[in-house]
Amino acid sequence: MKGIRVLTLATLLVGAPAFAAERQLVEGIVVRVNDRILTTADIRQRAAERATETGKEIPPAAYADLVQQAADELCILERATELKLEISDEELNAAVQQLRADNRVPDDAAFEKMLHASGLTLEGLKARLRESMLIQRLIKREVGDLPITEEELRQRYAREKDKYMIGERAHLEHIVMPLAADRTDLEAKLAAARRLVAAARASGDFKVLVEREVAAGQVSGGDLGILVMEDLRPEVRDAVLKLKPGEVSDPFISSTGVHVVQLIERIPPSPKPFEEVESELRQQELDQRYRSHITSVVTELKKRYVVETHPELLATTK
Image 1 (cartoon, one colour):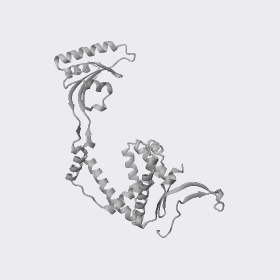
Image 2 (tube, helix red, strand yellow):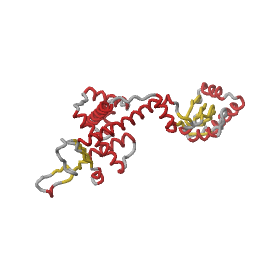
Image 3 (cartoon, rainbow, N blue to C red):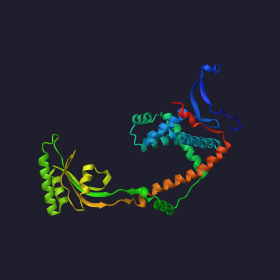
Image 4 (spheres, one colour):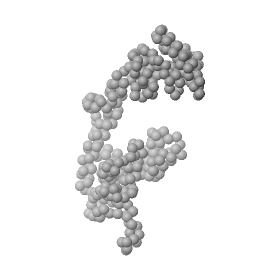
């Protein structure tokens, strides 16, 4: 394939070829690897898919990287074709079902809605999955296994511990006295909450008092467990920040009713235990090593293939 030169800035044209004035630029070919091409529409579709996955729009400045990644993928797919690697229909269907399970899609209608939101059809999804699976298979074949020891992961954990920090946490016990829709009982509920607070501070038995009130069926409450301070509702966080361990707050109001909380324990920021992030560390280390190896593989492939990229076309076509 390499012996065939391709036109620089090749385009797809419609209209009668004998009359240049009737030609109309439809799409530019942004990536070419031998006979494989991706047009402006293809790259914009990939950008839209990534935006859906991440929840963030792809800025124009990032399109050059997106085009380069697409060129690398086409090189890998071309190599997979050379090696006659294939993905069976059974493997592909299993991947679709796994995708549905991972996204907790309950039925076909919900799945179609999800695809539509991503700008995909089922056939389009299968095509992208097939490519992704071929790329993974080729990388596995070219790179092979990359064993990672626990000691290597612990060293990475020590270097990147700040990435796994958990913010300040609080262990809380609470009670909520719900209010009527028109809040006509607000003063009565505040008075009841103040009596409970006074009793708890005098006896030190906030938990017992809460259990008694909950059993009476007029309130809800109990042990909230250990919560990250940043995740608390503002009115709860404000109340907790004033407390020392063992102290009971003054009553405060939220949209759900009148609250009282007791701070059982305050836990300063700390990193997650190694055991909780070991699998994440392993995947990150594996991804990094694969990227390093596959970069050298793609570099060699580009020496053998006809490769052209034209990210500038994305700035002039919509």
